[in-house]
Length: 161
Image 1 (cartoon, rainbow, N blue to C red):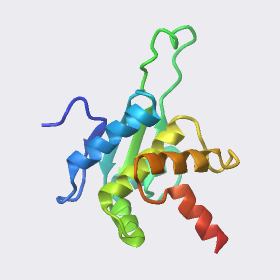
Image 2: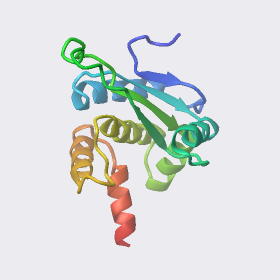
Image 3: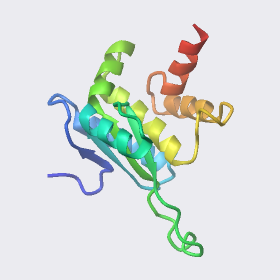
């Protein structure tokens, strides 16, 4: 039975995935990073993420994490509804497993990295346009959450090669 308080929805996931560890990390990100603002995270497979990526971004390929920010509250309601959701995430467990293997850590840690990255996007950050703001935030939160190297740091290292 799903935990109604958990922001994580488990779709197509590996049978050995430690769901409790993923739920705990998502709860920490929600409390500490998002300031208590809710988000929902679907863990699924490449096929579903590819479908979502094609439909909403026009890219016919799977990716590791997709972020879908919530629509802003109507004017005047935002102050009355401070707990509105940030939005939704979709994470490919197949991509997470491959990236975890490549970087030498667990799939649960990789999912934590992807949740953090996605939530920072939901909070309005964009590593492609913000002159390092998201990279710095991701790095700071990754250390506090005791997670391995983040996505933006990995990308910067690859570019430097």
